Image (spheres, rainbow, N blue to C red):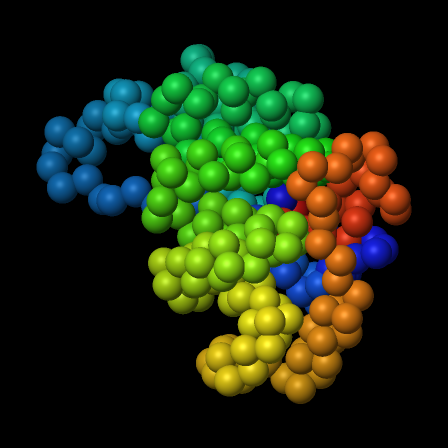
Length: 266
């Protein structure tokens, strides 16, 4: 959710939503939403989808099982199961889009996310479109899409983290700090946001804050040395540069940057 001249060692692209651990450490990234248990017999017998639409008990169970497959990285089997569902609810469209994106099938994922921008899942839709744009090296459009996602879903730690990360790699340190602090306060267990913020604090010489954060998450001295080495190699991306003209690669990922969310990026 990658190479010179970059900082992040994306040798484990298994952590997008990955964890910003430029170079050697890798980056981390996305989470899902949990629903509240039904408190009446009627709501138990009439499950509803993410946008409040009624769905059958069988479809609700199927979607739950498919979500578990996605969480386990079983994207092909999830897509096969989604193909046999009776209709394309917002829930199933999002699962399809996320599965295709995680498989690197962006051409299949993009139109599905686009279909969702006018639904209650628009925040997730803009998020997915923003990640795809970033992977394709379209950094400026990616930032705009993630900003839209943050406006629609302001309390999503994953969205705020990914937006903060893009601000960071484009040299917008003040904006990056605000987004990453927001992500971490929304979800104190968000290791990816914590590492992204740590990188930023060390990069901007806020040593005391960086030390406090390192102690909080019990990072080792070697982790800090790796981070400092990454900072020494860091060169911000140009928001206005044509992706095809970038030396060393055409995308955020190819330049060694990985978006961090809490979902493994296969």
